[in-house]
Length: 424
Ligand code: GDP
Ligand code: IMO
Ligand code: MG
Image 1 (tube, helix red, strand yellow):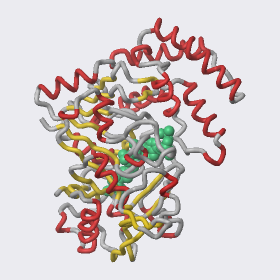
Image 2 (cartoon, protein in one colour; image 1 turned 90 degrees about the vertical axis):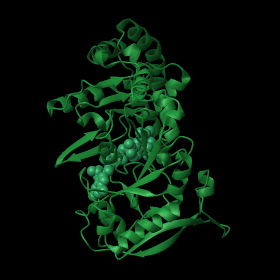
Image 3 (tube, rainbow, N blue to C red; image 1 turned 60 degrees about the horizontal axis):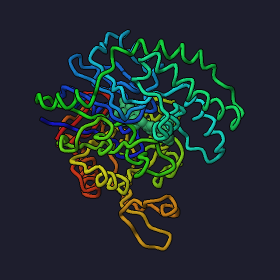
Image 4 (cartoon, rainbow, N blue to C red; image 1 turned 180 degrees about the horizontal axis):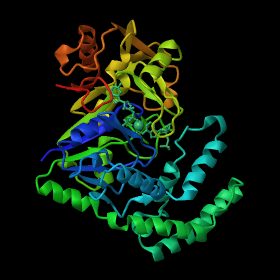
């Protein structure tokens, strides 16, 4: 049966939440496989706004099974806040399951995220300070605390003592920070464990069985391709694999299960946090896109950097994710800009031109975007529901974008609501 993956193709916040929500309406199971509460996914239904960080966007459909896979890092305190918030709005979380292998974000991870960012001085990454990097560091160091441990008080108490002692040493002796009271942490996290115990189940098994039973599955991406630890703009990236391939590892399924891979992009580009951004607009047009598009971080509230659509990065995403189609959101935001631009290639410092995103920042340095110009549009497109209803200049923009990135555009977002979508 169909198993769709939805991934971000730029630097995040492409409107994945909206596309996932729309596709979730046709799915029986929704699975999240990487990242943590650094993600912020917005779903708008009839004016009701939901901001989800860890819980899969499928939660808004009462019969959909929502799974959090082994590759996710889970902050139990924040997660419980999200559960309570949804329950208080009448959304049931009874169909939610978390893999026991998922790693737990502990308070020292959050502290260390802040301390190491401060230590980097002007060369900070601009992380969300949710402890994501330090939690993945412990996972790969093989000293992490997992969801299984969290819901087994004896195991938890022992692991907090062992790991906590080392973390306290690093915090106090390397960074000069304050040590954690490990007994207090044990008491607090034991309570979180009690609250989460009924949600724990093997996501790999549940997904496998769902597929065998002919269910429709959707794998929900968080973050995005250019934030991938290997194929993004390292070191200005997150610490997981937001690529389509990351889904298999992060949820424990084989690649043959996947039948369709959808990439999500905005009709322009945004980035929150530091790092290179070749098509960035540091001018009035950039401000206009930020204000009209409401480009402020869902998780941290930071203003997002804005710029023109970059076909070089989305072409890279089409390749590294093996995309079948693209969803282009926020075309409506580009109304009333006289001339729109798309970056089609990069001109290197030696004068040569490349259509491929450079592998390392040193090679990206000094690259200049090569632009094509497009006549803008002034019409309000928020009520358009078919491609033919769009103004001619919008259709030309999308058609050329498809050609440049080498992938068909199957969905076009014309507003934040789940109904404001053109499907082709
Ligand atoms: P995600 O992290 O990829 O899920 O994206 P975010 O939710 O962080 O940011 C996307 C923002 O754009 C949210 O505020 C959405 O409500 C909004 N949005 C999504 N699609 C559209 C669209 O087609 N038009 C407009 N105007 N807003 C959109
Ligand atoms: P969604 O799922 C946009 C960025 C941070 C920072 C870098 C590393 O909403 O698209 P981290 O806290 O992960 O160690 O920060 O990654 N970042 C995101 N930017 N959208 C996200 O998620 C992001 N998740 C992380 O801003 O630059
Ligand atoms: Mg977001």
